[in-house]
Image (cartoon, rainbow, N blue to C red; front, side, top):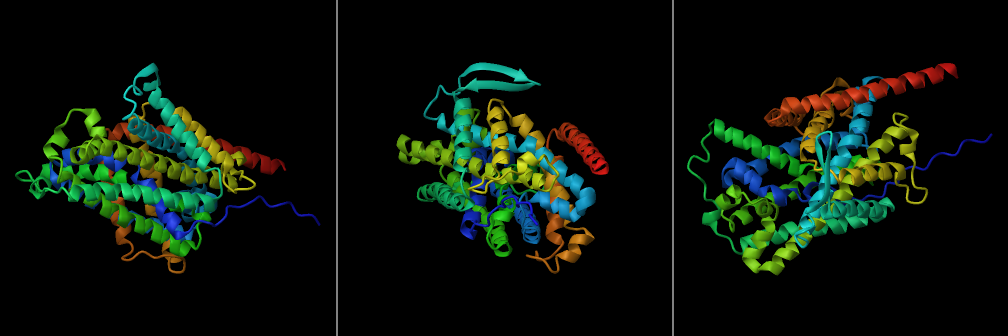
Length: 471
């Protein structure tokens, strides 16, 4: 009796060190180097350190959720698998997991493209005319710009796609080297600042900086919003859960370890830079170029123009590394949905040699290449709402359900003080949602995306049911 050949499966080849490095490069990117003036500005002084600390606390609470769910369900797709299992594989869980994978087709390429554009903007430090457009238009109100920066951003995406076209063991080795480079970039900034440290500048708090009034909490909310974005990525290893060695140990160590490492480096970097650059000049500068290249200004003041060039190259490398990590993780979500017969089977094809989700990777990479021509900030910030709703909030609520409360006693890592970290994380994300200036508009846009996904899911479900009844 001949049995049908089984399709190849993902390989568990990612070590703890590689998983930790993958999370670190996913988290850092270009964000903290660009947003430092923003968080200092919205919080009104060196008390911006509270924003970094509160962002770390929120990430830690949410990281405990990811660690617990990641060890209970160490599968490809991360949140896709969690929603499916916790809400019921044949009922709401199947619908929620489909909608999650559906929105990834929109939000993931936009998120990856923002990293590509960040890389291009930093490289243009050496090519000042690269930002000059040679063609421009708009599509559905979103500006389209073709410039040298656009081509550089596309090249960054293409490089990441080529590098990811290999086995998970080789990818793990690359992740470790990139993690070391990104970590050393942060350490370089920290050491440079503390060797020229001026405590009076670093702790030049304005009058009333710590008065617990409405202005203080408004500033703290805005600062926490910025820092939370800079911490995102600590869950990257969970998307490749089916490729992690010893997930019961590796996933919690990678998630919680990356939060601890990156939070420490962010806080130290904040203090060291403020000990060199006056915070009032940094926060009040109207020069967008100076804001983008704050770290170049910082290094040039200390060591000259050549040092500024070195730090720009290192930050560009950090941006490219984040593109690599994002594309790796997100490509596993449509793949997981396809292998679950919840997405077109085309997405479930693995490379016969490297055992990587080839079609899913090519699809997300191809959409990202197109997204590089758009100026995306408004679109990206709108889609963040979808991510919070269908990733952080929905799986956080699922971790409170009776199904998980009973299973967590026998499966994987268990968070301390359950369910307090979950309640704190949910409260933090709800606070971030309501802190957004265009919250209602973003909710409407998110609703349209999810409504379209619901229609597609209903049509697929009807077709599949009709086919099964016919057969």
